[in-house]
Amino acid sequence: MQSWSDTALPTIPGAGPPLRLYDTADRQVRPVTPGPTATMYVCGITPYDATHLGHAATYLTFDLVNRLWRDAGHEVHYVQNVTDVDDPLFERAARDGVDWRDLGTREINLFREDMTALRIVAPRDYIGAVESVDEVIEFVQKLLASGAAYTVDDAEYPDIYFRADATDQFGYESGYDRATMERLFAERGGDPDRPGKRDPIDALLWRAARPDEPSWPAPFGAGRPGWHIECAAIALNRVGPEFDIQGGGSDLIYPHHEYSAAHAEALIAGRRFARHYVHAGLIGLDGEKMSKSRGNLVLVSKLRAAGVDPGAIRLGLLAGHYRRDRMWTDTVLAEATARLDRWRRATALTSGPAAEDTVARLRQHLADDLDTPKALAAVDNWANQALNYGGQDREAPTLIATAVDGLLGVQL
Ligand code: 5CA
Ligand code: ZN
Image (tube, rainbow, N blue to C red):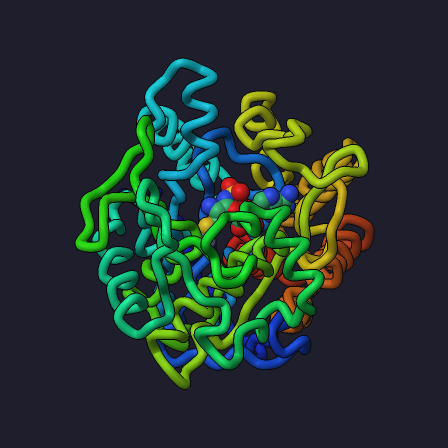
């Protein structure tokens, strides 16, 4: 599937410290240790509705990682999927009387426009579930052969499930206890009560063909991929195993990332799916998580149409730390707009206070588990100095603008 237009990144003089990030599995901030090519897989959208600020916040988080890696001289192999076959698509398409493929295409196009406007660096591989069905089939075959997967005893719908006990380390990614797993499994798309499963938390790998649902032929019977296997296959075949970062919002910690890891690790015995599991906090509105099912969405495309500068959207989302759940409010947007204006006025000056220290601090704070509140404060400091007291350094305004562009993705 076509990715979106790439964003050119400027070269910023100097270099920063190596990136450290919180790893959900190890429950600590520790160094990310990429080779010359850093590798990252981030869970993409289910395209049945437009991109909201929660999605934007998650992709923005990993965009900072991408930018920091590029700034440190790494190539980045970034992969993102699109869940373009799933129940929500069929339901919305039926409600609106459109074909589920057309709905997906429309929303994916809008997503690309939103990502381009937000200056999110495009993934090298942007892969749909439909495109990767063959990869899933091959994967499921291997899991069946090794005994990690089984077919339920149901003549009509012989669905295929993954044994949660197929790997010894199952559960290490979320660290959740059994009761929490059971609760979240049921809440987040699992089917604990499906008759014929060995364990209520065994996850669906292949859903046998149903009337009125799309399906693909397979040696083990026509059907369509389960959700976690889609991401396991796409990631493993492009950057795996042991790629640097598996990313997404914190709603994906369990079951999605637990099972993607477990499916893959059942194949790559002894190795870890990803070295770091990184999760962005959830963005809410009016005290509740922003989600398509609740309908409390602030859409990136609506904000853009209303004339909001994409730079202000980035600064609003970056004003809070990526791991914290946080609310989007009018105040957040107003403060971000004012900040963008201040930074623009300061960098439009012909000279200002020396900027090397500020750039060093910006890099330092970002490398420290993406501490954007401190990173923004460092730029605020320089801008306030420049606006209130001026300065003699004729290179400083351009240096700040270049660093803010390259590292924070905000054009001044
Ligand atoms: N297609 C799957 C992942 S394979 C999916 O979760 N799609 S989604 O459209 O629901 O979400 C896309 C991405 O945005 C995921 O990484 C998800 O964790 C993240 N996300 C969803 N809602 C929010 C929110 N309110 N705040 C922050 N991130 C969110
Ligand atoms: Zn995923």
